[in-house]
Amino acid sequence: MKNFVLAALFGAMGATAAFADDAVVDANGQRMMAIPDGVALSWKVDCFWGEPISYGGKTFRAMGYANGQMINFMDIEASYWPARFKLAPGEKLVLAGYFPHARYASVNSYGGGAPTSSLVDVDIEPDAGSTNPFRQGARRDASDDQRRYTFTVVNEPEPGNKADRAPNTLYARPAAEPYDIVELRYRTYLVDEAPQNAFDQRGGVPLPTPVKLALADGAERPGAAICAGDRAMAQKMFFRAVAPDTVSSWWQATPCTDTTPKGAFCNDPFTAPAQNPPVTEKFFGIPYSLRGLYLPPDERAKLKPPSSCKLAKGFEGNADNAYMMTFLNNHFGKVVEFRGRYPRTPRTYFDNKVWDQSKADLRYWSVMSGNEPSSTQIAAGIVDEQIPEDRDGTFSVIVSKPEDRPKSATQACGHAWLDWGRRGDFTGRDGQTTLVWRNTLPANGFAQSFLAVCEPGTEKAVMGEYLPTGRYFADAAAFDAEVGCLNGGK
Image 1 (tube, rainbow, N blue to C red):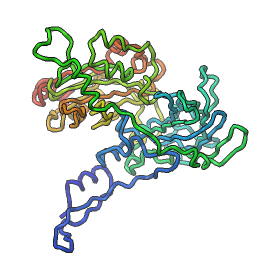
Image 2 (spheres, one colour):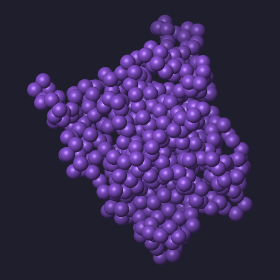
Image 3 (cartoon, rainbow, N blue to C red):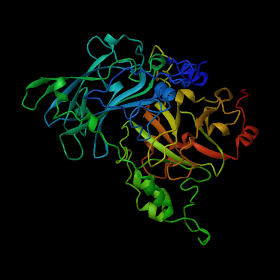
Image 4 (spheres, rainbow, N blue to C red):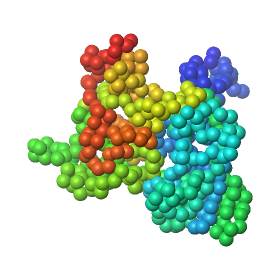
């Protein structure tokens, strides 16, 4: 007899899984539990690109976790490969790559806890005889030998004027000492269906490969020279997290008690910092957007950062992104619905043959759940092509645990459903979850994205109807009775 539960799971994910016969017994006559095969990945860790911070997509869903460190509020449909190596000022590292079959790809450099430069797919000039499939009207199904590009990493500060940037160049000068250590992240978002089915989050092509190291004195070495023991540092990455005890201390410093004066600020020990109705804010860094949520308004105001549209320091995100966060607690209700105007994106997942962003507002958007502050790990996530657009141009995202999922929380009924997660916030409060919303590369003329919010507290004024707005429901029955299917769906 086969293990039908696991077989169904792996079969639904497109993986090949073989199982031992349950009737097998050992030499002592003991019946053996079946051992499922693992998912064979299509790449190996090397000296340059280290173990992914996240290996998302179908691999994440089939295996139940993201290969790698699974940190930094990552996206379930994104994969992040880190590279860390020594590159002295004046040196250049040349890499050869292939444009992936995906919605988005980029290389960011980092220093001082923030991106220092970004080279995004659409801006990369292809090699002679190749095409860039991320440009309007380009063929997305070009063969590998027509998807080639070459780019250079230099240990120099990024020019202030974009026109002064050299083509296909990543200005990776670190923002903090030591100045010879360069840190990169290569990303893919929403890989197409065909490579997804092959568990290949690279997008069906190899990762960029170092091909030449040019020294400051003009001498040249093969790209493999970057893997010398005194240069390669891919396996020396590290992760900074907020300790659970630190998170607990934030709300325990000013807890609500029986003696708290009416109207005075305090942190409910069961729900803080979640609010009812839910509040969604742009992430402006850990001091203001995490620690500040547990402080009285006047104290939090002292942590308010200067107006800036750039990504906050201390959170090594993507320079092409902006993020919003919503803290939820099921003491207020077991089901939450978020509504907002639907930002349009290119459709790519089903191996679309031509790149078309003529009607797009954003390159990509998504929402993840379970991002507890202490580990920054996710429980689940959904992306734009999984979220239905209603006839009136809006979206509906329902968040609940599986056992609390409304019957009408289906795509057929016009809703996208997101698993609440079960880990709580790692401080012993299992009712908590955190949502992280992501916007990537707004189109010219679209001024209602997360990236356009440059000052805390202006989210609604800037985004208008595009700001996700949440509402609690007591349980699934309450949601089904009050909302149910949209537009007559079933």
